Image 1 (spheres, rainbow, N blue to C red):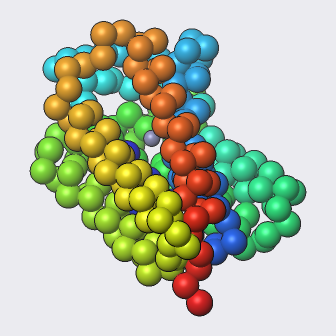
Image 2 (image 1 turned 180 degrees about the vertical axis):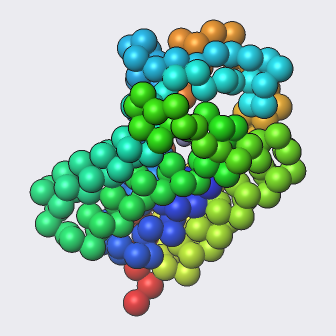
Length: 215
Ligand SMILES: [Zn+2]
């Protein structure tokens, strides 16, 4: 899943108004932000499989995408956020956003999400086999989250409007491109392209500075 995680990041802003959108994006997409680094380090493995849905087979990714590690990351990031910001509500929401990633991946992934590193139990309902169902669930979370965000914040200036809408369109275009483009030539290229997800964190911070909570 891609867009759906950003929907969670948008919605999280309502639950923790003092937390930046950049931070909620970091949290909701953390497992996918971590994954390309583990690929480049050779710790996790993916196989480019043009015949597979999304052209990828997730061979081994327990450190970024097992339930147990999602819980560990969620606790660590929630605790780190609390240590830095002393905002308890924000810390709970940030931790929850990290964990939400795994539960949003379950319906769409094939049965390749491990419960813990070394586990032989893999989950995933495989909605990816149906392109219309995949798009429907992605858009439901994305647009639902965005609608909540729009009712929670308003632009302070023009940047607050344009920076937000540009990101909304770029993310949607990124997702659309991933559906129609040919498979990546090799794993390092895929990993480097995926590292581009980190750009949306400062982008979210930038948006956040130009918008304010609706009282
Ligand atoms: Zn993921």
